[in-house]
Length: 119
Image 1 (cartoon, helix red, strand yellow):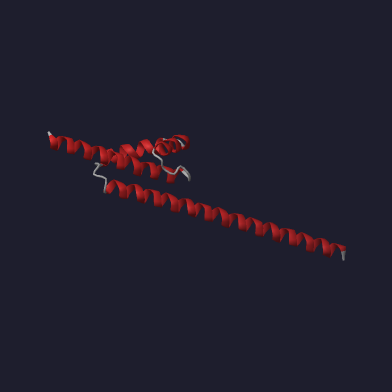
Image 2 (image 1 turned 90 degrees about the vertical axis):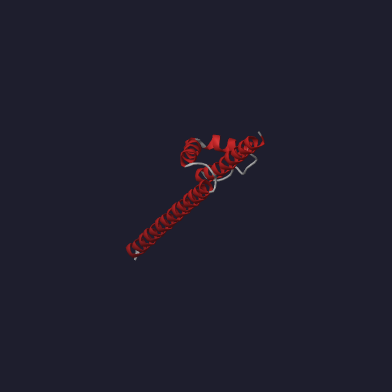
């Protein structure tokens, strides 16, 4: 009887460990899927901004490379300087900053063209 009870307890422990491992695996898969979704969303926002930015492809690539090279502290600092939300994961911060930089470049280009028109 004692051996049967011990075997039953071991089986319960094994089942609990398997269930915990399965739950951990599902959580990791969900986190990975969420991160992939954030990355895709950030890439979509960045590419949409570039398409409508009036910047040429080389300028967009340069801005993207500058933003992507920044670490989290630099991204947060740059966002804070612009009064933008500095929370989130790196892909979201990079996309937010890239959008802001594109808007700034577009505004600077518009200011430059209006100055030329006035002359």
